[in-house]
Image 1 (cartoon, helix red, strand yellow):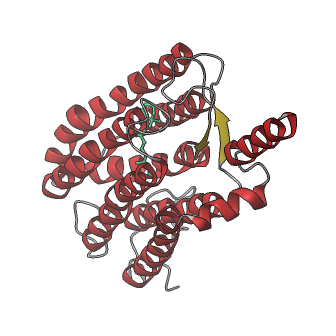
Image 2 (cartoon, rainbow, N blue to C red):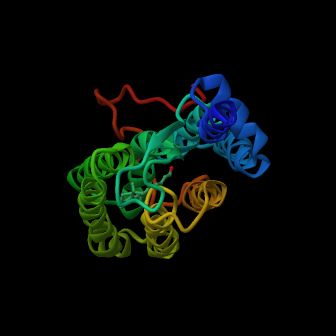
Length: 284
Ligand code: RET
């Protein structure tokens, strides 16, 4: 009787034991085809986007237009690294949820690398948007600082295991930072784009960005980190689809516009130079 009981307990422990080592997590990811594809597809798309920017930007000479193109490229550069971290298991952990969580006591797969790498990718998206709108350094820096704060506090929300209330409190703080960014995009940059002459493009980018970015906290809330009505693979695909909209589609539209070097974008060869008359074209 004792032996049967011990056997049952051991079997239960084996079944419930979450993967621990990086190799086990890597295996776990690639055993779930849907989850693995949500990473691999994004690595491929980020690579193709970089090639597209290089091809389209070859003949661009204006430094301001080039600055926008480089910023778009950095979004995908970060993305490749981010998804490689997830696919390799490096930035995924199994974390025990606190009391009161729908999966309390269970070790739940957390893709914390996403929140960490958004810290580096979202500022480039905002630099691109701010430059397209023709905004100033203060507002661009403000949005960058707030997006970094939003992502780091989002990471804290995902990694807090001490208390459910504290997880949601981090979520609230992160959402407040997010609203500052939404305000600057919707109010300041919309008005500035009108004056700059980029309103047509900016308004399309604004809708894709604001609607797309609202999807992230909604997914967080519905996914395993929040009220857990969506499973891990669906949540991961949700983020991957939002990434496709907010990064690659936005990049595509920007590059097609900027590569033509319209007057609303360019600023002349002295733009950003540290000494006058030293500026050169990339062909020199
Ligand atoms: C979290 C959870 C906490 C509350 C809020 C969030 C918002 C995340 C956003 C992410 C945008 C990411 C993008 C990535 C592109 O590489 C952290 C999910 C408000 C808005 C655009």
